[in-house]
Image (cartoon, rainbow, N blue to C red; front, side, top):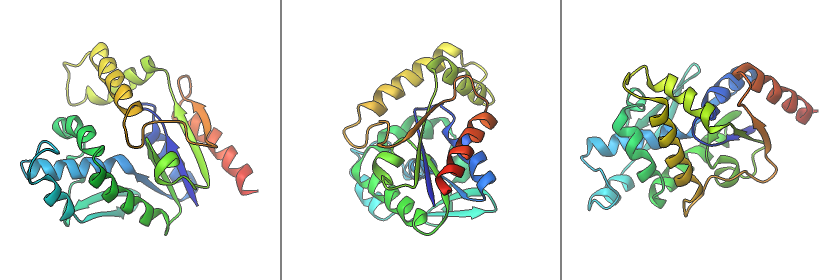
Length: 220
């Protein structure tokens, strides 16, 4: 069974997907981690732009692999574990620039589709139910007010950067929203037949509970 959760940055997709997958006994597949791992790999190769003459060669030589240690998703590029590098500031800044490139998308999409075809999975991202897995059994779109998204993201980021302000984070989210919704390939949209849930005034547990009730009805 494939359950997709799409939504904008900071809406709580990954947190909800992880909690939901544990309740269901499914794998939680975080698609964004794959893009981040590739970005970290490219940084290690001293490539900071898709215009670099070695960019295509490095991506075409990439072997992307996902493994699970119990419920923890590990991401490998050419057999090197990049899991602990995924939240580095430079990785976060460069990932959107690399993730829109067709050959990067193709690499990630192939990995996602292969895993989803073999496992019960909750998979989150910005284009899962709309483009990557349009035939997912159940599709959710998790929305949230931008001010609340900024508060949540600030709480997360302040652990590593105490100088950030709420306004700083909100501006970055607004830029990311604009970028995601206007991408030429797989922009952020509400997938066809998706069930929309607004998490602005809901806790993670409350969102998960709503999803579980919907899933239970679907299984009947």
